[in-house]
Image (tube, rainbow, N blue to C red; front, side, top):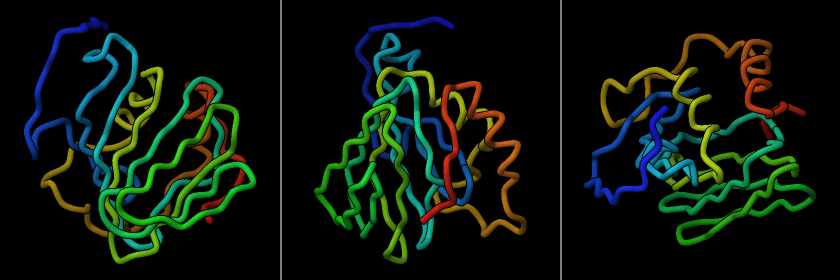
Length: 160
């Protein structure tokens, strides 16, 4: 892996876009771009979208809601937010989110970088910059849990 700390600029629509568990994730920066400091993705998801409750051992996460309404569950806090809201999830604190509006769009970021590789390894390249087709099957949670463990992340409950 080659790390750089060179300036870069991406325009709207640029990035590394994948479909992951029903969401569109367009990575604007990954660890290789930031000297391992952080990754940043623009995420679009449909109503009900969100990951299982989980906890990271190595990363702090931050979300900035651009469009829609999203409920965040971080530790003992539960809050529903809209555009302009920022939510912080420190490492070792269980968290998840659930999209409440028909669709939502938000920025997701983690520091340090590294966990973006989980998404890139378990997602697939987006065919278009739109939400993926509705999945025909439920995800294999056992396989995801095993893969997440490689990144120091543990699923501790179902989605909310």
